[in-house]
Length: 581
Image (tube, rainbow, N blue to C red):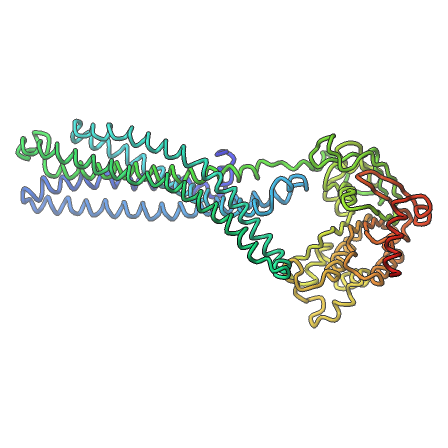
């Protein structure tokens, strides 16, 4: 896990290396300061030697300035290293997610991905900065200070040796208890983000049904769970500070007690082992040793918090897309013909939980094909296999005479335009949204695509026409307008296969008919697959596929299916009856 994360340091490696070196210099200077002060007191101030006092005073000031410089520059390099590391982490995670297949994306909820890209990365960034500075400074200070303390008085310094195991054991117990709680908290953060995102996305529904209180309760429940668990973890971590404080003052009291006896017995004679200056130095080293241990405990706390976050980040980075282009991939799709051969499919990759079973179909290039079936009959799943958004569990899907698994993914998907059930527009102008279909599309090409999709009828009524700004998710256009813009965007690709997944459901029947007529006249060589609930949307198709419970129930044209297929006839009769009524 650590090796995977450290790969993201990359161009900021120089700052990550410089920081510990500068911190080491700062720690060395900080340890020298008490020793120099003892010389100043014992050999200068107490003896009244002003020349020596000035000489040591200047040296002390110089060491303090050097320590300050080391500390300042280490702070700058640590900040650059940690922020760059976090930036690379987000970059790598985001790019990894872009390469996921639909089945990979299904493993992570959108709320969880947002939490991992924000809260989890921030936690790891803070831990990284603390490790490069505090985790280097604290052990070095500990080693330097203990060494200096033993060189002054080995007997008194044994106090530190007795205290360190007690602190180590206490820290181990604290971390062992707190870590599982933090893991639970970050899962609750995912849940909280999901509640907020769902509420904001469906705020109009919430208000129309006057369910604000219910949504508030959902939010409060999750928020309360986070509060309770975080409080529980923090209560455990709270034992860290009093443990450190007790140890620090206990050491200082013992050192002061024994050192005072030594000073009284030796008459403040350095030859007899203890002086006032050396006592002050020992107390300073005691403070440094125990502060180093306290800083180490803070590092352990931060690592405890960030360990769960680091694991969640590595999960995203380790997730490999199960749909990749093969070696020596085919880069050209010959035509828009489609063949399904004994195709089975399961989202769970379980042969006992098939969504599609035994599908055999042949669609000629340029044909218009309708797909009809009840809710849950796997109509959308079927068309997702064509651009290889998912791979068939068994059997094969061929496009242009080649198995889709033989194609370069980009080349295949460039030739297959899909207008999904959930129409998505992005914030930006209408032109910018349509150019997702073709980045270098001219204004004439954009207008022509909109004419085919009957989108020009409303775009021309806007004051800014094609420069009209679209809100995030297309919030400022109607459902039917959004669908027509999405169809126009797909047409700009000039694909060999066009799939409309119930994408005219919000369009009136007259406009739907206009769109289908434009397709017949303007793109006759493009294979058109239309999933629809309305018979009128598919009745003029060359062939209509009737799906039932993941199986192909029948294939034929409108007239043939009316005569022989009970499912198709039932749907047609119910819709005709509704229309007459």
